[in-house]
Image (cartoon, rainbow, N blue to C red; front, top):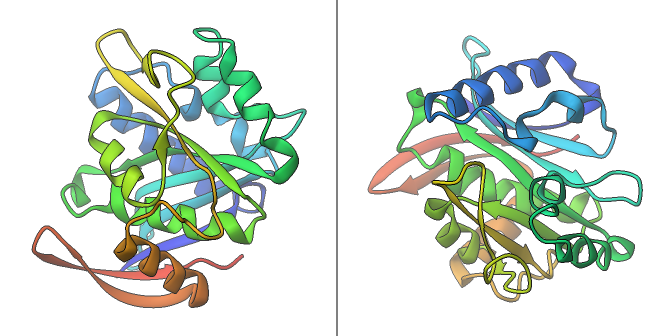
Length: 227
């Protein structure tokens, strides 16, 4: 069975190491070697929560994502990645820190589960679902072109005040990333109705087995979204 499990980074260093190795391997396969969210300092940060996808039969890690909480002393990876290109990034993020803000980052999946929606749809839903539980009112994300639509489905909108109407060349000059923000994590007023409904169900029942539909196939997932 495939399990999607939540944990606080500092509570499970072994899983963090597996996450780091898997994420770097995926990035190296597409020729990317310098990504702020792939660095390993986050595993020692008490304000980082990890969603890991694993095969329960042999503990192989098949994918993952992280939610970082912003604070006055801890920059989000999205700020470290883009603020040197546009200084307005810092002020945009800082304006939301008092209410509770953070970032979804480091989404990845192994080739073994490619095409199943693991590294895009299901991890994104789970990350938005748990963000309210950890006290966030808003979320940021730096999205690759193929994840922009999914982010919009769950309520993210392009933050056009930064970059080139939200676009940055990152993590290298031939790749474009879009700076996005979800303004209301608890209510998801700009999310699609279907996505909002699924996320609210995950919040209400955080430990559950679900048969998910993705591109005309069934994906059997066991969600364990409690700490």
